[in-house]
Length: 308
Length: 308
Image (cartoon, rainbow over all chains, first blue to last red; front, side, top):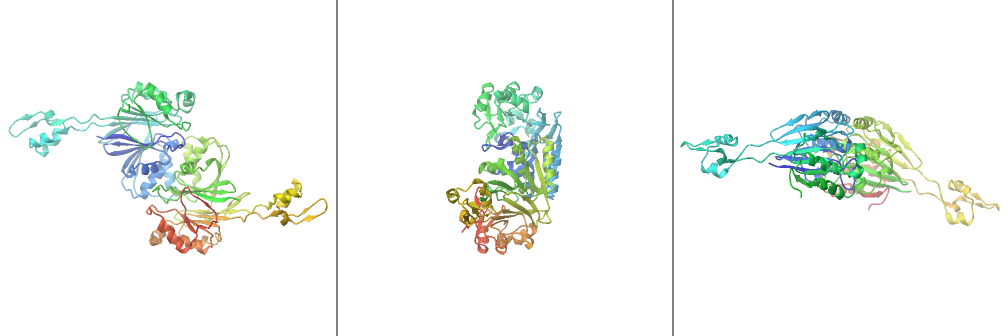
């Protein structure tokens, strides 16, 4: 049950110091989900060996360019590389117009369908529910309509204890029931408890993506007890006024969010161009919430891991 | 009289092998002109230390994304970095809508004006005429409306021979006339020929940017005798059918263009993703037109230089 995030971009507003604008890829049970798609995201995927063809779902938080300027280029490359399977895009309603107008003027008829799902910035909604995950929007508080995304991995079936199942020569057709927790009755009438033949599957995990937003408790309840919180931390707390004015969060505040919502781990990102070194941001957050790490490009973080 | 081109991107269609989509910067007499702006162009400028703030003119050939997907990100960064001086953009008319729709939905009111000049793909027109250069569009033959750009550097005034001018103690107010070629009459009545006091300025040069296009003689006359021709060379000539179908040029054909129009030098670019190594493209072109070089990212080429 893999659940990990690879950071493709961690810069806010403009690219600097080799930091790209926001983009990250979740791998949940070997399916890839792209969150935000700043300019250069497809180049970052090449650089870090993330197969863009494996992405079937793209989530865009809001329409500031540092969160989506790489989207149409990525969609265009998928087309040029022969994709035919559909792609689902979740994002603010006007994103559809932005995509359409560009493909119209390039006279491109995509070889694959885009299924576009507009997000509602005002209320949390379930926007995806498949065999692996349920995804909810998280209404955030930014200068323009913006939602975060909460990924709740689904509980999987129990796992067979292979050697026991084979030793008892249990027929294949019983496997499905066993995985669901049923006992097994052998031909001689012996009843075996399910817990002797199976083990529980891993605990499913939760990942919350919160960017961009001012510190606002309205979304705290929804993200309580996540295994990993990605939260923007654009500024150090000595620039709180600037953070408030631009509807962003400080590193100290991001750590407060993690602490108050009892997150297991915190990743901070969306760093202002003013910080060449990120050490102070990390230190500031860790003083409040020790299990914090910087979202560094090219790195993959297991959801819920202990960083320290 | 500097006249040189720095390549920021040389890939066609999709970025691969660390090759970025089309973008290049001309430096003409220390003013920078950006031609095309594929995704990641602003990142390439950071990488190669090209100051984006020095660019006041942007030329977009056509609306395939590999030639403009980096534009709105670049314009956005100029805004965020506090630019106030206007920027002139020359490109296909619908580009205005593509820019406007994105700034509308990000609720961005740019701090600087964009002066947009739509190009006409059907006839050559002078689109810029300033103290340094005249720029004409070159109607090309691609799948969608597309123009190249011909940059004709202007002849500068004659240059004073400083030591002679100082030795004769010629008053400052005579300098302007001297630079224009007038003789100088000293207070004692002696007349000095202009050619004894000044030298001619450097020969002005011409640079033609031709991408994307099928091989078509319609634009040959306009670009005859340029000092440097940048021409797309997407494929090797063994893929001529593919080139014709997609309205692109082969390396052999690009060299034919240079040869028939009597260019002084040829830069080839817009390489297909199928070529990891570019040696064969270069060899093919040089067999026809020896003074050819690959347009390699990060490299700066003096217009009209002898490559070999």
